[in-house]
Image 1 (cartoon, one colour):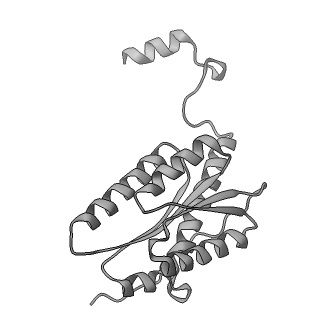
Image 2: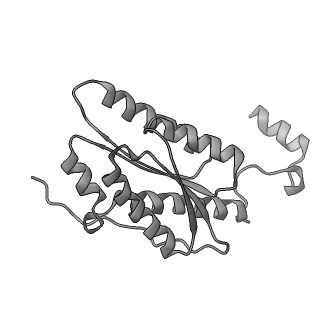
Length: 182
């Protein structure tokens, strides 16, 4: 057995303006998701951010709800919370894979999402991951969303000359044409 080493955790971000997050919860295993919500809200309140909660029928509906909210609201970030426990069929694999891939896709589109959907083998594993004394995954998902929001703000405010440069930065069409030929 490999010895467990402590994990590094980033410092909590500090925001100039209050961040607003939406918790999208699939409460199929309510005892578990309630604990995840407590963890997420604790992390959110620790930096004086605000949040709202909506519920959806299951983990597969979480990404759809996030996409809908992003089009129709002004949330800075999203926290996906739910629990999928392996059963006797392959439905578990489909739900885990598809919900996680959809959340990943939304993240790659620029949404700030903390994924707190537990994918576990049994109820005991879920309880352990929702336990505040053992590192509540709802809190971890909230921390991830908050760090992504902070990163997006930081990148937007960056004054360093990174990325694309415009003609105003000293690149003329003649220079760019000659660099294209190289």
